[in-house]
Image (cartoon, rainbow, N blue to C red; front, side, top):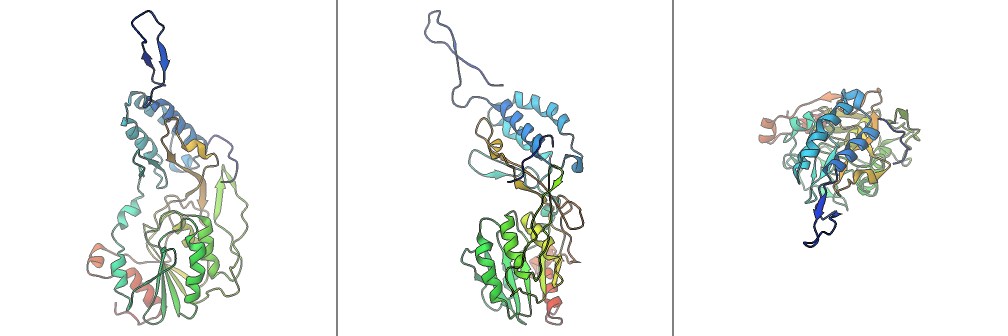
Length: 347
């Protein structure tokens, strides 16, 4: 990263001859003008200034400039999206993305553990463990219910916007008389620290330091997370994770793992530890109007290791297989139930 970050958050020429006389040609910029080189320069310089993990990932970003500039110069029309895709792929970052003309998001690189665990969680299989339908929170982003043997189950479907801020405390209050709670955050992608705080604070009886957030080589001074109330849920808690648990789901898991009543079960998370929208968001809009996204904060686990690429390991590794799911079994969920109420599952 080259620039100091504040904490927070070839022109194609078209010659138009007018008339058949000796009038002077005019240089104009018609709609659809080729701004590929300008777009490339904007992407490269923004990543160069803000991206925090070149050294950790062994990326020589300067050398990539000379590789991709000629390709941007030669690109015509939508060919530039291929150049952009492959340039951003070099970061091997599951958060990095760009937007296509149709408005969809494209992620050039998918973390290996996310690929590995695709299909190894199935909500319909999970529902077979319940005697009644799961309930939905008002936002529809939390599914919850009570398993046999009085075990609470909470599936978090989203860490975005303010869904969990509004919904999670009321859901956990419904679980206050359960013998234990399973929090399922398999398949979670992205979200805000405010939603992480909304979940973790409900289990705190004392302040908990945040994970380490590093901006431009300096650790951000963050106020420890405080208990939400004097009625924290202190019975045993199991957090279910896998390679599809990503970004905010990983941060939430790592923080919950610090609590004495919490055990993480499943498999190591995806490894998405570069967070935070860059302070100058205008840099994410390219001269042509195309958009891309990168983050700028290097987020570390409590042991000091980057979450990026490394992920968050479980306390107890339990692996689901495609054969298990096809047979209607979720071994990770079964192990969680057995841990909370021994002898409750015929495994």
